[in-house]
Structure formats: structure tokens, C-alpha cells
Amino acid sequence: MKKTQMITTMAVFVAIGTLGSQLLWFPAGIAKAYPVQHAVNVIAAVILGPVPAVGIAFMIGLVRNLLGLGTLLAFPGGMIGALLAGILYQKLGKKRWATLGEMIGTGVLGSLCAVPISTILLGNPVGALFFMPSFLVSSVTGAFIGLFIVSRLNERSITRIQGT
Image (cartoon, rainbow, N blue to C red; front, top):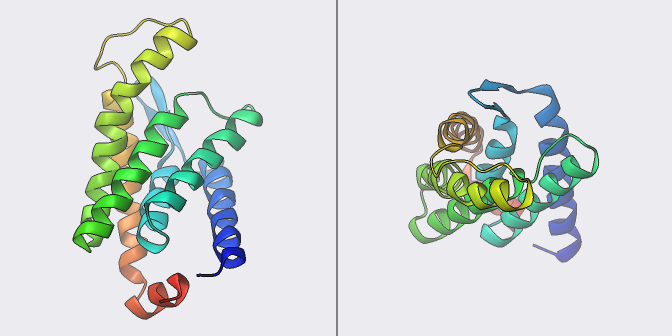
């Protein structure tokens, strides 16, 4: 994929993730679930790979925070989930592994990484598993939406997007 095409595709995913998070959300325990972010992570991981997927997750978190629509907790979940989804898809070649990577990366690892951010940066000391139920609900829902979408794309269209 050419650099301009990659940046443009990434920008579209950032726009979808940022706007979509305001259109589709629901309460999930102590937080709100934003499944569009996780769906974008799975789709970007499959189509673009782990590094661009992490960049997209970072940019979505950054834009949402700059607009006052998100919190610092968007960074660990989104970025770790995107990375693990991309790595598992790249190594194992199955879309369901990208889905599992997003769920584990965000729901488990991201929620654990959110604890020190909450405690140190936000001044809210919480227990180690405090964020896990909310992060899991959000990531599982979004990961399955992402799997549904990438499953509907045929392999030729994914290959055409990747430029291989």
C-alpha cells in the first residue's frame, strides 16, 4: 500500500472511530462502552496490520480527549487491543484471532494498565480488577461487530486494500 493511501485509510478509520463512539455507546458498569473503537481496532488490524492499527487507536483516543469526549483510559485499552489483534492476525491468519486479540488486549491487559493511570494520573485509586468488567463488555461487543464486518469483506477486497 502506498504511503498516501495508507494515511488516507487510517484517517478514515480515525473519523469512523471518533464519530462512531458518539453515535453508538451504552452504559457498562462504572463506565460507558464504546464498541465502535473496538470494531475499528479489529478491522484495522486485519486490513492494515498491527502498527497502523495502534496508530489509529492512539489517534481516536487523542481526538476524543481533545474534544472532551473521552478520558485517558481510552489509550491503554484501545492501543493494546489493536496491537494484540494485529499481531495475532498477522501470525495466525484468521480473523477470529484478531477478535480474540482485541478482547484480551483491551478487556484484560488494557483494563489492568488503566489502573495505574487512574491511580497516578487521575488521582482515583482503584483495585486491580476494577475496570475489567466494563472494558470486557465494551471490547467483546465491539470485537464481534468488527469480526462481522471483516467477515463480510471478501479476501480480494482486503488484498486490494493492502496492495499485495
